Amino acid sequence: MSPEIARLLAEATWQTLYMVTVAGLAGTLLGLPLGVFLATSGKGELFQAVAVNRVLGLVVNAARSTPFIILVVAIIPFTRLVAGTSIGTTAAIVPLTVAATPFIARIVEAAIREVDQGLIEASRAMGATAFQIVRKVLLPEALPAIVLGLTLTAVSLIGYSAMVGAVGGGGLGDLGIRFGYQRFMPEVMAAVVIVLIVLVQGVQSIGESIARRVNRRLRTA
Image 1 (cartoon, helix red, strand yellow):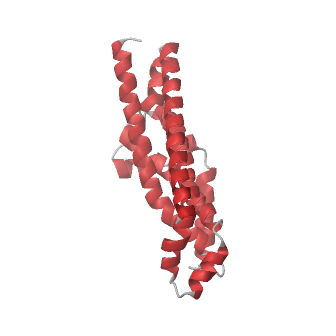
Image 2: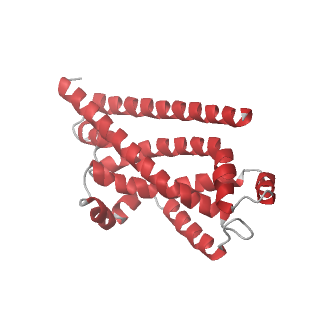
């Protein structure tokens, strides 16, 4: 591999990490409260709002069921509105965030619904408010599952970030398409695949390690 290709590979790896990190953080900031609300706004729950819960559930399901590459194209006007352009690494963060948010919301919702209802009832009996129950009971108890879910989201975002390369999003996907496919350089494609595998393995290992530590802390608390 030439020094120029090595430089491009390093640059593309940085772009991918940038896209995944920013989109993951933005998706978490949006998806976490959305997931908490979906898990606590059903009939008889802490923040009962059945109609709103159903509408948000439909929106989340619609976003999750849309294939990512179609989503990228469908929200180009929104991407231009937010990023000022629909091409480039920064612009690619917009569809990545839109794809990550409902995914994270459902993960958080599922994790919270797994929390023992007895803990909620006990907290209510002691006079805890709904917000206190969410902050001191639901989120801490669901944290290991949420961490694993966020890890899964990050892995998915790495795959999605490779897809946005097909529409000018930059990153490893763009490098693989432009050099590995269009210029018939299989060694570049192989290098891109190897880097993606390493990134996925690294993210998965880190996420699992954090989840184990959080779980041990909860059990010893």
